[in-house]
Image (cartoon, rainbow, N blue to C red; front, side, top):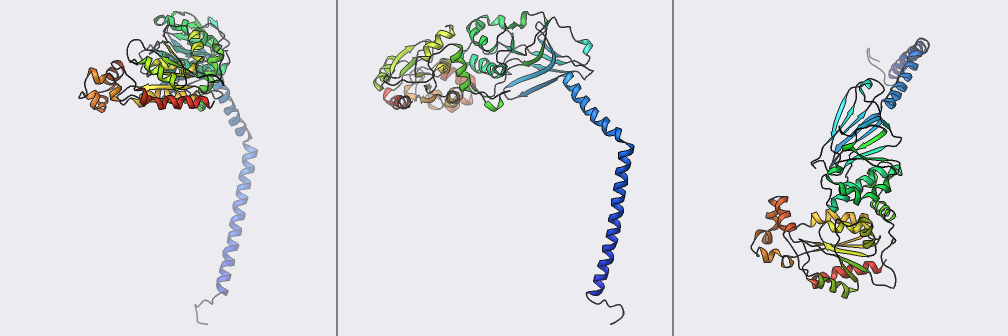
Length: 442
């Protein structure tokens, strides 16, 4: 074997053995160092572990004592959940969280309505810095509270339900009646509370507080400020605080509140009943008698009804509940579908002008969520009064897209405020038949 030459196998094995031995030594030293360090920490610093645990618990306790403010400013609505020592001042329209210890001061301005762009006085929600600065309680409540405003578009029947009543149900149903309503803006809509008094009493066992006239400092364990609108005229069950709720639960609540007798549509052995909604001023069905006769010929028992906004809610609810189907031109009157028995049918006549997306957003999914069958009938240019009043060459008739490009004001003015319809009953017949077939399967 030449000098310097390594014999294959033998020398490599020896080298590997030497590296392995060195590794064992290094590993042993490392384990020894870890053991000694652990022993030193366990003997010399047990108090550090205890102190850190105590600090965590003290922080948790302080957070509970200080309460919390959680504000959600996204989507259509701004809301705050204020938990702890919460104090309200009606005349100042303020909600204040009083901490147990010194905290950084925070403030949020919340419009107490489900649509943030509505013109309303905002509520000042404040987390105080110094507990000593808090005004003393003059009235102490054991219940939580929900603060909301009767404003914005209140007074329009659809907005009453979509913007206030459905969101209020979502915010307060979890309390089983043990909740106080703090209501602002009442002086501008005094009849609103009269109309919906039974609804409010169904959700709360306590007298409401008129915030605009309330000079008391009221103390609550929890206050919800504002109402949340997650879906137009409907409910998203997984977003409901507490146990999930649905629009089926909402309509069931209405049947309980107004003692509505019918919980299912159609009855064997009788003709299904259809309510044809009459509109008195604009957006009218010009040939109502002809449409009513067509519905009767299809197999319905038909009644034409004018649903007035100033009518008593309980009386109107019972009237609608006696029908199996509601038919009407797009408008707030279709909101009465909430009183139809489950399995009923809502038929919406959509005016000319490519406004199906608006009409369906307001009634199609909500009706389905209520457990109703939704059908719509889109009016053609030939069935629209615009053909007579404006002529076939007017952009509103010839090119609806150009009207939409002009903005919502033009769309509303031309297609909703200035249009009546004359339904072609032959063209409408399949829609009536589809409604009848559905009810006969119930």
